[in-house]
Amino acid sequence: MLDVSVLYSGLETPSTPHRYGRAITQIDPPEHQRMKVARSAAERRPIVVWNLTRTCNLKCVHCYTNSEAKKYPGELTTEQCKAVLDDLAAFQVPAVLFSGGEPLVRPDLFELAAYARSLGLHVVLSTNGTLINRATADRFVELKFAYIGISLDSALAEVHDKFRGVEGAFERTLRGIRHCIGVGQKVGLRLTLTKQTARDIDLLFDLIEREGINRVCFYHLCPAGRGVDVHAPTHEQTRAAIDTIIERSDALNARGCRTEILTVDNACDGPYLYLKMLREKHPRAEQVREMLEWNGGARYSSGVGISNIDFLGNVHADQFSMFRTFGNVKERKFSEIWQDTTNDVMAGLKDRLPRLTGRCADCRFKTMCGGSLRARAEVVTGETWAPDPGCYLTDDEIATGV
Image 1 (cartoon, rainbow, N blue to C red):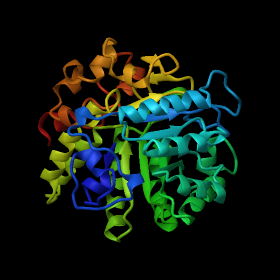
Image 2: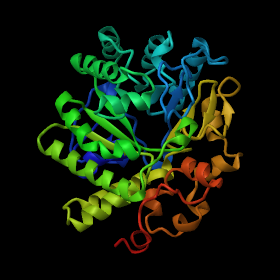
Image 3: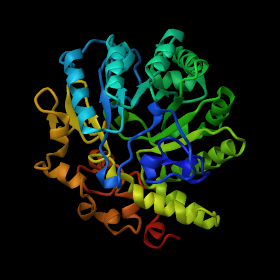
């Protein structure tokens, strides 16, 4: 995850110390938005992305869990979930992100959120937003959710509805966003970059500013679940999209909007941003290099600083790696599973640089990028440590930094 607004524009956020090991300026965020900070990125406890349910009221074309509007057997009970939360709190994870499917279809969601908060956990929700009404938004505030991430694929209703597979989804999602903003709940958009959405970024930024949205995460596509049939942008289109994201993010913050803009699931975004800052003689380029090196990109992400528990309780390196399970929380504590390196892949994820092959092995930025998203590399090539095909840096850039 690359925080463009922090690195390029100098915007301070509650997550900056967790992500980069330092604050740029001093801020005092509310207690429920603060994240635990490790002494080093390698020592991080994992943020837990938890798919509480596979059931969903939409039919998104890029859904990595192949979710549908039906009940799935074998999901964890309320009491089983609470036992997991006890373990996560004792293990001192920095955050729990409730996801799905659509987590708001689970009738015990708020009971679980309240229990998590009673344990002192930092709680985040990832939702499609269509089920959020004013009462729901009020509950978010009451329980002190740190952040509500809402998926919106385009500023164009017809494009969003096509991606979400349900007519009218755009209006319902936008209404949910407005309910959150109306009660003062921190909310942000989540968007997956595809050939279509990469073309619509300027329109999305117009909507962000118009609606007063706090945060936006641009996800690079990983071909998992139904996402295998979605067309990712070309490398040239991706570079153009990242340039637009950087420029529009900087312009927003220059106007005092204080909007957090992040890119996710392609760690070569870090070297790309750094090279851009060098070319522009940006006054903070060296500081940004140090922050990116501390962060380590994917080096300290999947299998280290990011984890996943799926709807059946299986533990994975991240939400896109459901093809490999390290254990199940119904049988063994998450903390035990996560620290068990008898599995060769888990051991490799915790010390991956020596295992990277091809252009990743020889890249001058591998300590900054860490070989990017292993799930994408493995899904596309069949090899765990192969180069990530999503890397859009040129051979010259990774060899000499030109």
